[in-house]
Image 1: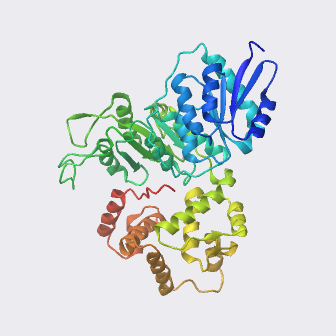
Image 2 (image 1 turned 90 degrees about the horizontal axis):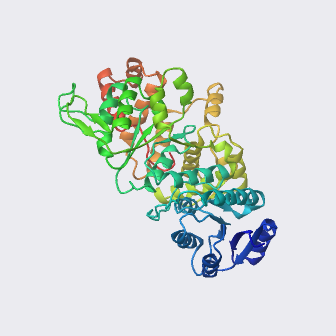
Image 3 (image 1 turned 30 degrees about the horizontal axis):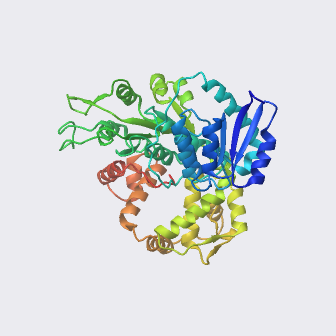
Length: 479
């Protein structure tokens, strides 16, 4: 076996390491073993193996630290990390530090051979390739993207891989899957993390105001422009600008976004001075932009400019194994932020959660857990405590002889929610939500919406303006 490729396995569980060795050793592959990180480092320096497979939890230093030491010696070193308790942070951090892959031990019987074959092939390719030195300047951060499913592990790996560049990123997925949270993670792990991350929802702002929101305006540029305003591009200078729901951006404005991407220049509304822009663009949409391009509702040239790297987020129904983890995370979050008792999920409640289709995805799950926590009457959530099927129940109740909630009963629900969240300003919240819902019920007809709310159309316009100014967004990690 003089010309055999060498694989070094590092694991304090010698039985598990021996099992991997048995799976991988062939007449052309020699497998070495180590049980500690310092022993592994000595063997690596002496043998220079083609592949290093290391457990993350080692002594006297971790598998991540071993990865760093090895790649300091050889920037092209191929390292696969394995762990029985992989976290979001460790997955992203390992990929950022240059790991070839990150595998959970429970999946090794299925994934070990394919990953090792791919790694050894990459080793052969790298021997004739130009060396690449990754940037290792990411600060430690406890990320709040929750998920252990295979689909989410791929998302974490992509976040780690794209973080070293300034290339535009397109995040796609259904509403509520966590697109803004992924965008924030990309910014956090990038070289721009010290600068601002600015988000804007292109669908939440009226077309006539969106250009001013993005590029700013000069004093007197239009009625109501009483002072110069700095737009989102200037606010995010040197950092990251997140364009949510980019598929809803009007065509004329798409051309101006394209100019910024191509030339790095823009002009404020009503201005004559050309400003330079150094901003990384991360866009997101729940639409099929390829179809929008075919139907001429989205510019093809802008699509290709934005779609340099794509990250597709899976719907929650395709990552059922994450539902329990997410529910427990949201329970802890509610208890911490709203000063409520920490609740527990019963097995029956988990079964109910896992059997639901979650059309609203992670956002719907968080809202469900929040409602269940506020209305809980014990410290254990049972199946009956999970408020699913609210719409269907309401429709059924409307068709029955039972009377709907009285105004007094509805007010009791609102005030109970306000008492549960001491930071909730009830009257502004009610105005915001009622205005948004009235506009939704009337399909944006301001005359009908004003009549429904019992206010004048002029008053409604002011409220809609305030709604647009706040973007109608919740920047919470669960978005």
